Image (cartoon, rainbow, N blue to C red; front, side, top):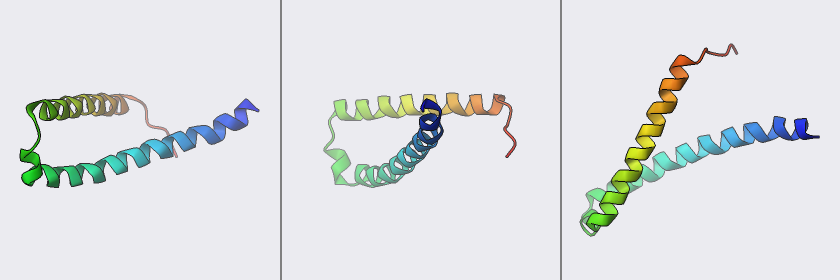
Length: 77
């Protein structure tokens, strides 16, 4: 029973993370537009600091995963 669960659960997780990345990119574009508007000027230094920290963490993790994917042997289709 667990094997059947794993076979269907893993692809669902992959689809969820792909969707999360796609959603993040769309929302990031919207946020960029808002940051460039008068709304961006209303953010406090603390808000801007937290935004920069979060972006730094995401950038570091994405770079780490990209480096790992370049080292890993490619799977044949």
